[in-house]
Amino acid sequence: MMNKMKTKELESIPPVGSRAGNRRELILEAFHDCIIEKGFAKTTLRDVAGAAGMTASHLLYYFSGKNAILEYYFQVVSERIMKRIDSFRQDSPARQVELLADLFFAGKGITNSETGFMLECFGVAVHDKPLHIEKELLDRFCKDYLRELFLQTGCSVVEAGDQAELAYALLIGLRTAAYFDDRLELLQARRLFQAGMLKQANFG
Image (tube, rainbow, N blue to C red; front, side):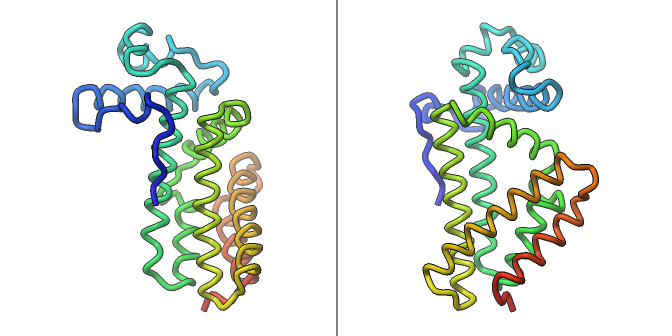
C-alpha cells in the first residue's frame, strides 16, 4: 500500500543503480548529514552540494531546491517505514505490538538521528504542501494499520478507530519525548508504549 509520488519531479527520479540515481543517493546522504548537524533552516544548498562533492549548480540538475530534496527524502523514508510495518501483518497481534516497539524504540529501523530528521520534516510540513501530503499519508497508513490490529482483538469498528488514534498519539508522543528528554530513555519509552497498547486491548 505504497503512496505514489506527488509531483512530476519525484515521478521522474531515476531508480537507484542508474548513474543519476546513485548521484541522488549521494545528495540524500549529504542532505541528511547537513540537517542533523545544522538543522533544516540553517542548511544551504551550497552546504549539501559540498558534502556531496559537487557544486550547487550541479545539484540543481537533480533537485530544484532544498525543499525538493526534503520532500523526496521524506517520501523515501515513509515508504521504508510502511514496507516494514506491512511485513508485520502476518504475525500475531501481540507479536506485532512487539515489532512496532522494536521499530520505533529499539533502533531496529528508525535510528535516533533519523528521528531527528523526521522531526525537522514535520516542522517544515506545516507550510510545505507536498511534504504536508506525504506526512498525512504516512499518518493515515499507520492509523489504518493500528485500526486493523485492534479489530483483530474483537473491537468494534468505531472502537478500533478510536483506539488507533490513541495508540498513534502514544507512539509519536513517546518517540518525540524520548528524543528531546534525556531523562526518558528509549527502553523506558518502549516499555511504556507496549504497556499502553496492552492496556488498550487484549493482545493475547
